[in-house]
Length: 222
Length: 253
Image 1: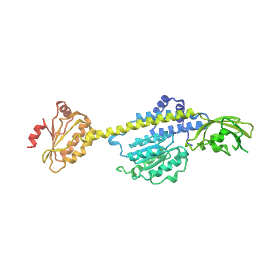
Image 2: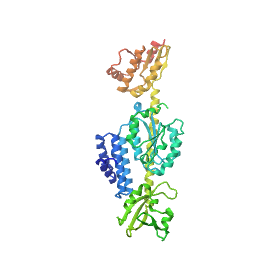
Image 3: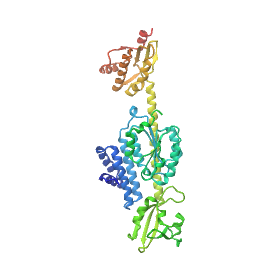
Image 4: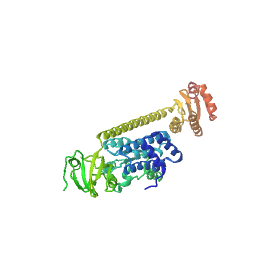
């Protein structure tokens, strides 16, 4: 496991206390010191994993976890709203559509992924968690994204995930399909991987994909 | 061996230290059927937690755990698991399923969140539509009208902003390259406000046109605008004419 810095434990503490005011002030201070990617990947993500750990240690309940998630969601939304977005000519023509598979209620990671795409100047549709398959297909056909990002945390979603990937591989404009979420870390999903399907382990991995210019393989004019 | 030995109102198991089920209640049978081992009904992500907290070392414990979905459901169930060890060999385990009310609240919250997200999403779509409309509007703000073989009129509409002129620039440069056009009349009559960045883009464009050998005439400048244009040092090679009428009389006869 990663070395735990104090920051994330403190943040987890604010999340669990339900103290959105303090959590926000704390995050804003951290933002002065650290880049956003670091904040997402090395502070907020570990803070949420730490919450999970406390549950395993029988110190908190599921209800506490829900509260922490809600506060974390609020803080992320606030940070997002305060960030100047890339608009107009500077915005790329690249489009990404992101959602959590049906029944999946975990979405904090996906939200941070949406922000990472926006930071790179992409146009982003973030459809939230628990999206029904037909609904996602309608949106995808309408929006024609270059990247479709799927997220799942629990192993029970694997059949749905496979079905979705199979369906998306038949799209004629051949979007890149990214699979993320805790499932991408925990389970061997290599069998799904191909030129068109990428497993994204974490935000650093996603950022590496941006930096490698892999996004360049996406045809901007399509 | 095992059997539903009592009409207990809750799911109940008696297990040994290997979690092997000795007896169970009818309620437990209704949910998970006949199970050999208690761990079989525990969600895989909770197994470590259960192993840690249900052990003869801890005489009495209460722990929250996720259980495997039942009745074809897709989501693990949450329960409080109460355990007491009679001795080192056997333990009584009672499962208290989480209250339906809690689940309902969770569900309602999820619905509210997804509704907020939908609204957010609709707003985003509207915003995109609006941006497209503005872009479209910008494109139509500087039409290229050929008056004679070598003279064209470009009436400008609305405020002069950099966004607008970035949008029309390419089309105008392209159109003015056409065959014999060597004189362009920019009509300011319908111009509202002049933004500083906007006029920079416009003068850059005029300079480009000038280098392409086009004569540039600006028409219909209002007094307030004249002051602004003066402050901005327009390229000197631009001519000014008071009204379109005069310009047409001069160049189109």
